[in-house]
Amino acid sequence: MSLLIWIAFLVLFVGVLAFDLGVLHRESREMSVRQALGWTTVWVATALSFSGLVYGVYEHHWLGWRTDDNTLSGAEAMIQYITGYLLEWSLSVDNIFVIAVIFTFMKIPPRFQYRVLFWGIVGAIVLRGAMIAMGAALIHAFDWMFYVFGGILLLSAARMLKDDEQFDPSNSVLVRLARRVYPVTDRLDGERFFTIKNGKRAATPLFVTLLLVDFADVVFAVDSIPAIFAVTQDPFIVFTSNAFAILGLRSLYFAIAGLMVMFRYLKFSLIFILAFVGVKMMLHHHVTIPHLVSLGVIVGFLAIGIVASLVTSRREHSS
Image (cartoon, rainbow, N blue to C red; front, side):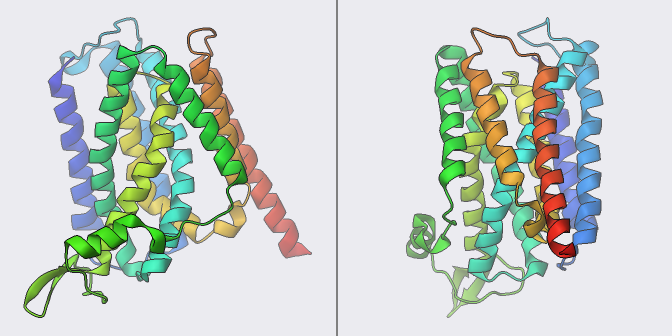
C-alpha cells in the first residue's frame, strides 16, 4: 500500500479546506439558501470527480498504489467510492437537524456558523479517521463483526423510526464538563473561539458550540462508519468517501436548514437506507449483493423521499 497516495490526498484535502476558508470565505457572513445550493453542487461535483482519480489509482496503479486485494478493478473501486460517498452524504442529512438545534440553543448568529462548521469538519476528519481504522481492524480480525455492525444499523433504523425527541444541548455532559474544566464566557467575542475575561483566557460560546458539533458527528458516525463497511472494507475508499461527504456538509447545512419543512419525508428514506445496509452487512458471508444494486437502492430511496416531500409541500401551499 503506497504511502504517497495517502500523502497526496491529505495535501489535496487540506489545500481545499485552506482555500475555502482563507480565500472563498475569509469574512464571516451569512450564506443564503441560493448560495448554499450552489456550493453544494460544487462540492458534490468535486467529490464525484474524485472518483476518476480512484479509478486511475486502482486500475493503473498511479503513484505506485498497491492494495491487499489486487483483484479490485478501477471500475469496481469507483462504484464502491460513489456508493460510499452517497451513503455517507445522505446519512449526514440527519446530522444537519441536530446541528441546527445546537446553533439555536447556543444562539450562534448565522454569520459565524460557517466558521464553526469549518473547524468542526477538521475535528470530524481526525475522529472519523480513528474510528475507521478501529473498524477496519475489528473486521479484519473478527469475521463476526459484520453481524455486530449490521445489528447496530438495524437498531439505528428502528430508533430513528420511533424517536421523535429532539436533541437537547442543555442536557449534554460535554457542555457541563467544558465549563468545569476551562473558563467559559456567556457572550460571544466576534468569531473568536477564545477571549480574555478578567485578565484570564476563557473559551467563548462559539468554542463550546464547536465541541457539541464534533460530538454530534461522532455520535452519528457510530451509524455511518459501520454502514460504509457494508459497501467496502478498503480503508482508502472508506476514508476518502467519508472525507468528501463531510467536506460538503457546511454548504449542505445552509441549504437544508433553510428548507427543512420541505424535506419532511427524507428521514424515512434514511431509515430504509440504514435498514437495507444493515441487512446487506449481516448477509455479507451468505449473499453477495452487487455494488451497482446498492448504489441504485440508495439513490432510489433518496429520490423517493425528496420527491414525496416536494410534492406534499407543493400541495399544501396550493390548497
